[in-house]
Length: 140
Image (tube, rainbow, N blue to C red; front, side, top):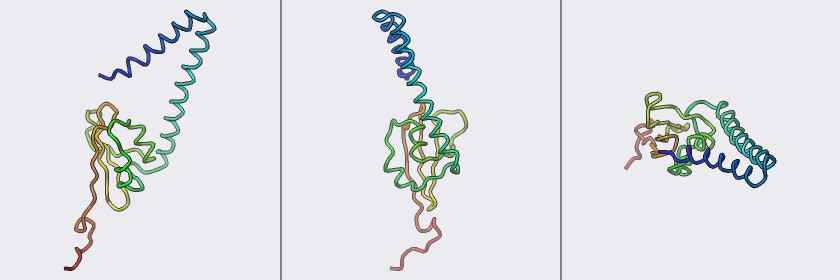
């Protein structure tokens, strides 16, 4: 269960209650203003990431190898979209868990990322070999 979805609203309500207890309605106004600013900052960041991603093809990335090196388990899908500046190509059936997205570079390498509950659980890099790329193997 994702405790962040429960604890953040509870913390907000507790802050408002404590502000009223110690500073009255003035304190409530300050805390509510700070909470609204925090929500607006997160919303603005999300919109900026999605605006950047909308200008690139779905599932494209400059270098799949570099993306693979930067990924860490536990990061959010929004963080990965911000790193790649592209929405991932959905590989799993729509609206099912886990969600699998793919980012591919121009060389044919791709990274498959598995997200469970919006957080990166597993990722794998695939690099085409010489036979996959249409090249001949080196002569002995």
